[in-house]
Length: 493
Image (cartoon, rainbow, N blue to C red; front, side, top):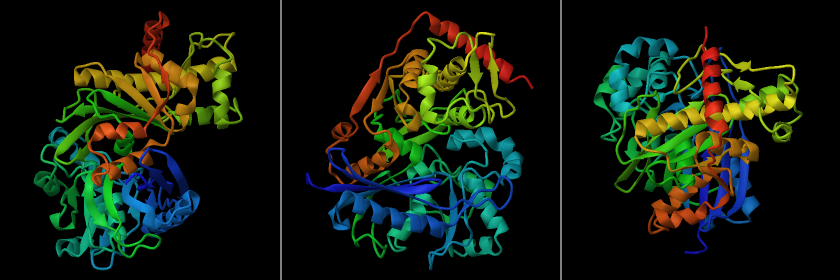
């Protein structure tokens, strides 16, 4: 048992990563394969499902070569995925009837606008709002706009799925049509309390139940491989979760009040809120974190639309740094931002403000302001955004947050993490491996295959590289007050 290996398939927006990990949490091999993006009209984003499948096959070949192992060494497979991306395929042949509509796609905005009168009830049932981001309206578009799709769906000829469901169908040779509870919770179609497809939402969105996959737990036997190039038949798929939930699990945020933030182009914050859904008063989404056996954990989710993208703007738009990695040294060249605030609302503001018309703003400039001050204000702006989300989550939860673990490329920035701990007043834990998403899928697979007795055994698989202590210095309240005033200016429109 000690020599058993885990395979994680992390199917993302721009490519697929495959990872092989042992039961001590050591990464033995990793491979990433990118695939094309398609933009047929402004605001439309699509993927060719066959490109997705091909990227998985290529990533598997790459990771086995990297790890120096054969597929037969794998004990269990975990899948994690871009969550709301929507596919519809022929049940008999497995052939998609249209390109996948990607989570970023905005084509259903007019439909969402007509559904707004139902939003309060929808939030109560699903934890979500009517936005083109989610899968349900994308599926409605496919059924309405692809010739013959609705009639074929009603005859039971078509199958709907998010990427996890599509991959399970392909990996199992068409034998299994299933989605895990975390991905189902992002569709606008699942009831958060019953964990079943909601009849009222299906009726509202005109979705025939015949297209829907079975909803399964995030850990447990989901399918076995059959006829998929690069994998031997019979390997068990025992873990599955959407990417942000997989990262929460991979960061071992198992207790109520445990939070994680993934710092990428944006910043994605999730906090474990326990075994019952809670309605947010601050515009946060409520989602399923995971289901292990009969135990379900829920989470609040909030996003800062621009995080690492603000650093990219300093690099590409202003030319202040040659590479994103240079931002830390430039920001550290000064001891404070000296009253400069940068609100990186370059794509509006998400929770808790939800102001799409907000615009980025830099304020507090003087003759003494340097490039270092602007760089430091950028890092502080990212940390302020995340702190806004954490404070909203704590208020909705009715209790202080316990800790926050971090992952993603920008989490390597020590100054950003130091400022995050100071402004949020939270201990920040940075793991050894910053790619928590694939690791979370592998850890779910280990649990689902019975390789660990309980979640406590999983903790050793995510060792902490560094802790950033929560300091509440005299500057904190002043800086938070100044930030809120800067946000008010950014929202003047």
